Length: 409
Ligand SMILES: CC(C)(COP(=O)(O)OP(=O)(O)OC[C@H]1O[C@@H](n2cnc3c(N)ncnc32)[C@H](O)[C@@H]1OP(=O)(O)O)[C@@H](O)C(=O)NCCC(=O)NCCSC(=O)CCS(=O)O
Ligand SMILES: Cc1cc2nc3c(=O)[nH]c(=O)nc-3n(C[C@H](O)[C@H](O)[C@H](O)COP(=O)(O)OP(=O)(O)OC[C@H]3O[C@@H](n4cnc5c(N)ncnc54)[C@H](O)[C@@H]3O)c2cc1C
Image (cartoon, rainbow, N blue to C red; front, side):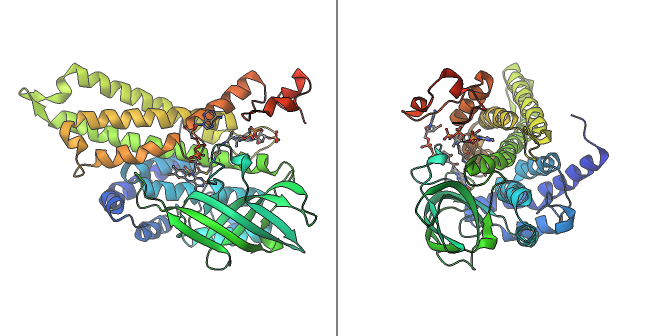
């Protein structure tokens, strides 16, 4: 996919930040486990926070493709910084920009442009892959909703201000309405509490935490009504989430690209048997395979980022986003592991970057929809069938044709 001169300039600007501050900070952030507010300031100064926000709200109205160009550059040096760029342009913020009221967009834009990385709150202890089985509830009380429940593994817990919370909606009579999005700002909303920080394997400067909602009151102006209403609200909200799947896949690609650069440099300089190890065909073919996987991943992600889902969606096509994330996340784990191998014992050392990259890259077949669950989505689309995963899922189909995608129960 050909990039415009403007996109090449954007990429170059991102590479400069990556090769400078981020290369220096990557290992420090990993060791300190502290959220990098200095990096946020640099991202703000370069206008990489809120790039996709429309100009009328103070952003630049950039595309998801522009955003992935920046994310990949960041991830070559520092995965935490790359994930900040994902969440400051995709996920929750892009959902608010697509579905929110004018006031909600303005509020969310102001927060992100001021340096906030919003949090998207979907997963619960008993509802991970089965996200539509969530139990966090939003009960209507007068003109407000009262949220109770728990989410976990929320990226940015304790540092993010804006939260987009997926919850099951009930009317005043206790009847279920579907799923809605609810906006809460940490520091302003009472009843939003972080109860635990996970001790993660990688991405250590990015807090992953458990959030508890205890009678969290949501005023009408903070209810994010999905365009099809609450009844089909989950579908609308997860459709918007396809943007973040592309972003997550791109972080994986960026780590792999960085790892490959290190491996090539090492292969040219490290000598054994009196010659550079890059002269051994065993390593040459490994490097060639790494590059091939990387190029394929990048092309798939660029295609997904440039795509639009069916019926006028402003988000990437679900099928392309899923395939790109499956392929890129799995390829990146292999590429980074092979790069570590090229370094020999030094690859296994905390004094070199490969060990950190191997820990960081591991998350991307899990977070954002596992590689297994995304394969089910792809299979469902190619078969043209709904593929319910619950034990009694097929019982709701009275006829074979009821399982066709598009058939309404
Ligand atoms: C969607 C799933 C939760 C499976 O649940 P179900 O089997 O109950 O639901 P479905 O019938 O498959 O789907 C319900 C509804 O949604 C529509 N849908 C589903 N997926 C998509 C999609 N990707 N794009 C657009 N629309 C979608 C589907 O067509 C149905 O619509 P109708 O009701 O028929 O109109 C499960 O497949 C799933 O996705 N699980 C993973 C959950 C997940 O991704 N969580 C991410 C949490 S955030 C995170 O991890 C951040 C990490 S990061 O890297 O930043
Ligand atoms: C670093 C990180 C950051 C995250 N950030 C966020 C965030 O910001 N917001 C948020 O809401 N969530 C976040 N998550 C949570 C993430 O979305 C979930 O971990 C993911 O959806 C999987 O859920 P689970 O961990 O409960 O695994 P489970 O759903 O319990 O799955 C366990 C295993 O079973 C497999 N499996 C489950 N169902 C099926 C099936 N039907 N077919 C085949 N295999 C299946 C899975 O693929 C997996 O291998 C994050 C996770 C990580 C690791």
